[in-house]
Amino acid sequence: MQTQESQSFPKATSFGATLVRSKIMGPNPLKLCEELLRDVHIPCGVRVCDL
Image (cartoon, rainbow, N blue to C red):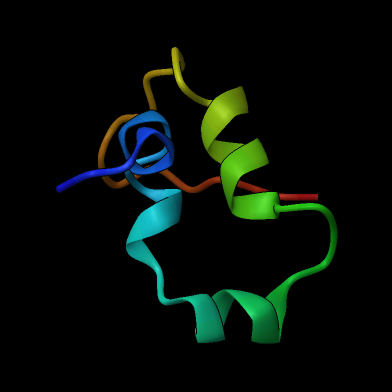
């Protein structure tokens, strides 16, 4: 059964909690990134510069 959070952030919640905690640099960068890019189309094979 999926939680409300996993339905809202399917990519961010697919990572294991241990991995996320070991690399976290803020409130929850995976969820923030997913939310910011929700309606953005990024074609397969392009390079993305994350500053």
